[in-house]
Amino acid sequence: MTTYLLRRMLSTVPLVVGVSIIVFGILQAMPGGPLAVYLDNPYITGKDLALLRHQLGLDQPLYIQYIRWFESYMSGRWGVSYASGEPVGRLIAGRAPATVLLMGASFMVAAVFAITAGVYSAVRQYSLFDYSVTLFSFLGISVPVFWLGLMLQLLLAVNLGWLPVAGFGAADNSMDVLRHLIMPTIVLSLFIAGRWSRFTRAGVLEVLSQDYVRTARAKGLSERTVIFRHALRTSLTPVVTIMALDLAGLFSGAVVTETVFAWPGMGSLLIQSISNVDYPTLLAILMLSSFAVILSNLLVDVLYGILDPRIVYR
Amino acid sequence: MPRKSSLYRDTWRRFARDRLAIGGLIILLTLGLAAGSAPLLARFAPNQVDLRKLDAAPSRAHWFGTDDLGRDEFSRALYAGRVSLSIGVLSAAVAAVAGTTVGSSAGYYGGGVDSVLMRATDVVLSIPPLPLVIVLSAIAKPSPLILILIIAGIGWMGTARLVRSAFLTIREGEYVEAARAMGCSNLRIILRHALPNSLGPVIVAATLAVGNAIITESVLSFLGVGVQPPTASWGNMLQHAESTMATNPWLSIFPGLFILLSALSVNALGDGLRDALDVRMKE
Image (cartoon, rainbow over all chains, first blue to last red; front, top):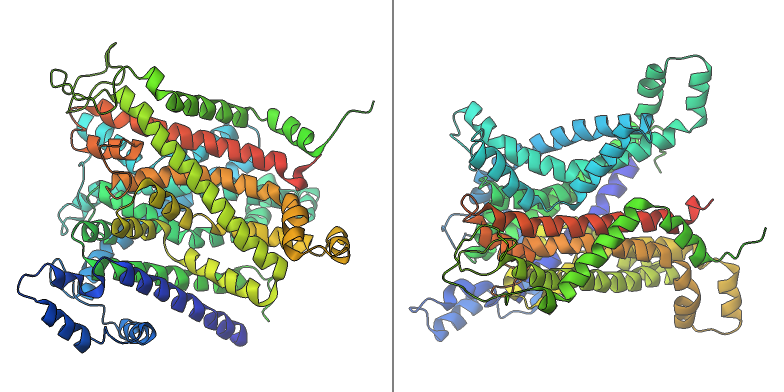
């Protein structure tokens, strides 16, 4: 187990390096490169730029620049936001809670919904319920997230006036935040629940045709016991894995959802940084979210081994 | 009673029984035809401004209404369809070619080539896709061609993995060994022997990728980093509509319905193709 853990952890090293090379490449490809912020400043002459370039080591070979950049990144020096002058780390830390709240709420709603719908549509295969779930999951996969958000705003906020159109609400009033959270959560969980319910359905269907399920039925166990005690445990393991692996997709969805609902998280920060041409913030969000994905994949692998006793560590 | 049966005939028979997939195909062809013949169907030029008809609700003259510049929404939606659908199809095609190239090289050669290519695939898979394309298109200020390349850049990994695993089995096949014994070059074996045998997964992955690409394009254009106005795409029509959503709801309803309809029918089509082409599901 320990060697497995160690090996699995080592295998994330090339991923971290790979992601950082891509992000560094983007930094190099940006118009103006790392000194872009000074290019429009009338008080900085070409001579100053050359001096800066030398002082900051930007005249060094690219691989040395990369190593130094990577080092400082890993020790938490992510630079200063071009837009607000704040350190990028503090800026992101201020935005992260809202994103975690939105993603956490959506994850839970989607998981409960997808597992319930998936299990029942597998148990009652080819019933009306099953067809509705299939249709629904197709809709969930195909609907553009931002448009769904706009339509909900139009219906629930503008026309019916039940919910606030957008925003976070007063941070010290949890009921107010909750009311603001409802629509973004519906949108983001629908976006992901369609996929998950299909996986659940397929997983349960596969398990239901296994020998040990037939044995359990032959023993005279009630259908309820067969499904909940025997089938569900095994069939949910791969589903849980897929849920965790979809974190990258969930974050992508959150970026759009936050933008539509003016939710003050990392996603809307990303979009703001684009209109502000705030490269340090952009790159830090890209790096951090990728690292989060790599980390969660690692956790899933470990968790998977604990959940499924058939997996043997080598 | 012997019936003529071939791989394609069998596939088509299974596919034709799938009503959802056939429905998707029909809707998709209709949308494509309508967008393709936009100059014939549209009664107004897509960017024709009419100051006497600002913000008009849907009527017989303007089926989908007009926007705040008096442009006919129906005509714009048709022309936007050309842009959105072709970006979707082309970027899925580019992604399929790239993914097949990577996957077949990795699977066929194995060893070091395989590990390098697959680690690279894992790296791209680790970056949340939408933020990556948003950042890329923000710095590239994209023309449609660059947009296609960027969207394809996040869509090739699935195909690469599928093709690789197909190739891992195929390269052990006796017919591949026979071809090698006859002195075929590696490239010829890949192109003539191995690739045709792994075409099923490629077709399915490419079809499903079209749906994703259409949605990605619409998101990018909605955020203002995709197709640039005045060229209409369904995504940037929605961006334009957002500010006047409360007073002119029709502007935000129709373009979104088109995106939904095309993504939905592509996905239904891809799902049907998967069932029809999947060897394991053969009767």
